[in-house]
Amino acid sequence: MNEPRIPLIAGNWKMHKTIADAEAFIGALLPRIATYDGVEVGICPPFLALQAMVDSTRGSNVQVFAQTMHYAESGAFTGEVAPGMLTEIDVHGTILGHSERRELCGETDKALAQKVPAALEHGLTPILCVGETEEERERGDTERKLRQQIQEDLSRVPEDQLGRVVIAYEPIWAIGTGLTATPEQAQEACAFIRALVGQRSEAAAQSVRILYGGSVKPDNAAELLALPDIDGALVGGASLEAESFAAIVGAAAR
Ligand code: PEP
Image (cartoon, rainbow, N blue to C red):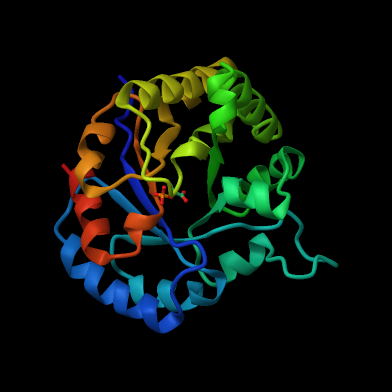
């Protein structure tokens, strides 16, 4: 009998919130989610608010994630942040391969193939984002795109570590657009991703958590989170207000 997968609700703040805004948010969030059980909660603030959020969430059920990371230990990489810099301040993990980083900042699958194992080696939980564009879906290329991203981005992760990766299926056409994948589309893509992981390791496929991301809101969260291959959500817009984020956490709680 496989261990049940604990759902994770992670809020990607993108380039929103000063340290003062982040403190106000966490002050409003913690009492709202304190009694929820059976769910892990993550916030992904901008780099400059990470330390403050680690301090303010200590002893709570909220984990703090970065939004990106370099794979190298150190070096001439202006503007980048190394894995050891995140662990030094007790950050729990990091988003990797968000479509905005891929599109706007040139993050490649080749780099991600180094970043995902680098995160794991440092004890950081990677949330690896994958997903197709609207044109790829219309062309019938969704599975080809997911296969290519999953196979390449996880290519250097040892089989016994694969189950520690969190994968976020984020159809790019649903991010920040108000369009949500239908439950059928989301389930089909997440089941396909799990099967891809299963080609490497059946045990990892059973333990890997697959999140859905793309316009998750309090009113659609419960339906998406009830799907068998969806183990949580990566939330953008609705994670910026404590009330809506707490409602999504509540939808995932026991
Ligand atoms: C995201 O940016 O990861 C995301 C899912 O955004 P939104 O919820 O706003 O669509």
